[in-house]
Image (cartoon, rainbow, N blue to C red; front, side):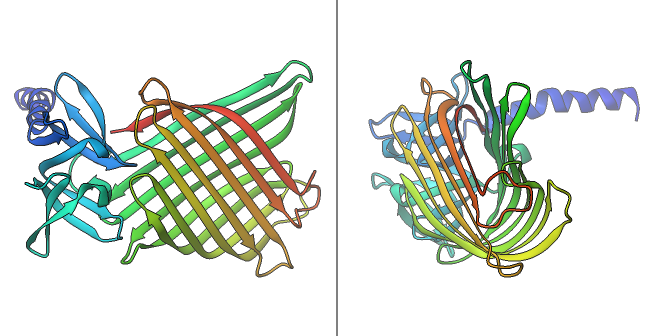
Length: 347
């Protein structure tokens, strides 16, 4: 490659492409219920909030109840609370609180309040990522006890598919000694089906000093069903089979078992500022092989936004129970409560 060609290529990357992006940001139109019209770039809608990018103002978020209508020529995956999924662009409707989409070659007006998710199909790879990163902990001088936590979530969406990577790491110290080590990380893939069903494949690893688990791997195949999904909450259930490989702290040897998995989850989000989130789930794991062993995991995480920004503060509570923990365990249950500061990653 000659120097001239290299210079032209760099010019295109550094100047032309950003200019094209700026032009793209002005093609979409959002009409507020008070009549104001905003020109910008429609990014996504999730948890009843539209992410909208404008020149000068940067990224803003508009609550769904304040939308009169909007339009965008880009292609989106549009999920309705009925479970129907459209792949379409948007046209502004003449009817308030509605937008026009294409369905089987025909134009159809849909209520904005009936839409629960909107995600772009085409576009920059990195724009399809969302998530959050959380840090937390506390210290008690009276007993010299320290708790540290690091958690987060990263998800990626493409046409009818959803990849999710959550992690959670908790350490409890008493002086210089670790009294509790509870950590887990999972990678899951979901594909949307009809009638609010989704397939699920999940691969994860975890560790728990209190329950005597030095290392545990699990591979789960299952299904997820949305019971209720609207602009303020989501209630879902899931179930499947899980293959589990476990190594205890006392080095008595690894075991491989087959277990069932049943989960119920509830997510709540308040629309008006300050934004409020509540993520909670209960998982029941009955073992099919290896004796009559049962495990239960409970997670509860309420949080609130800080000054209408990408930061939120909240608490996270976890509880784990094992009817037959590995030999050398300190107890058959473990729990913790931490204060956390989170940053929302939203493109």
